[in-house]
Image (cartoon, rainbow, N blue to C red; front, side):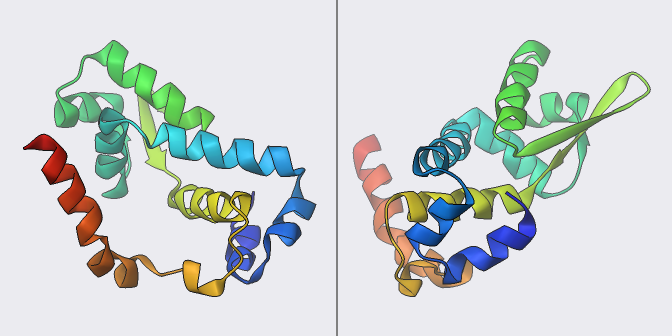
Length: 142
């Protein structure tokens, strides 16, 4: 899905998004993005890449994971369209496609049939309301 389509999604209804692709395709695309973000190690890689492109060696240093494990996580992120890689000599430079995160969120809301514009909250507006979610996680750890 292009960035142009992603910017149009908040005004779209679930039916309009389903016209972009089959309903099952929308659900599958949303699942892939959210599943790729559903691992703490991959979230650490994404967090590092949100600061800017990085080599695999830099990701290894940042995460403390082994090279094979970082490469395994990068394959999952690339498969979901979240990360692109480009060879530069012997190194691979990894870049986060931030738009894919927004596209995945938009697809998930559409797949759930949520067309209410109130559901399309900007992250800065949604974060203060997310405290109960964080508190729930803390409660599970106690």
